[in-house]
Length: 202
Image (cartoon, rainbow, N blue to C red; front, side, top):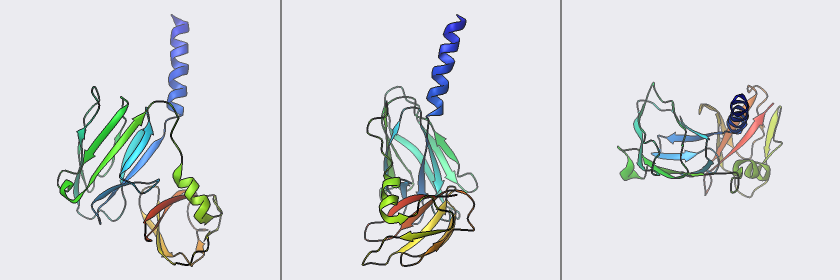
């Protein structure tokens, strides 16, 4: 019996150590849910991972909900009122399948999202890291970030991992991040196709 408990403990600890928190931003300005990886309202995660909703811009006095509308059989539904000062909400899917959700006051404006929960690691890629390698360098960085040359100049905003705006400018600038605290940040580039990339400040 003792061996069974030891084996179960090892399995559980290895499972939870690989779990990831996936950030989905609540974008009040455009009434959208957008994930921090590929600027989409739809995400794919592994079973056991956590989804966390954070403010993308100044939440002000906004009132939204994160309400499940279609979930796999046996999964727990969710209906969270998302309002200042209580904007923190996490959900850990316990069943593989497609989870669809909406903001009930703003679903008619397209404020909807989905979470595709899969078992195993196949199909999961870090899109933000790949885009970051193509568009910004060096990454990780200790002092500055450069944008790779383009014939267009776009505005950008940099957000902390908590969704706080820390800097803005245009892509023809050298970005000085030497005063930033160490950690992960997200750059939102407002071009013809808005995108979000992440970088690490060391």
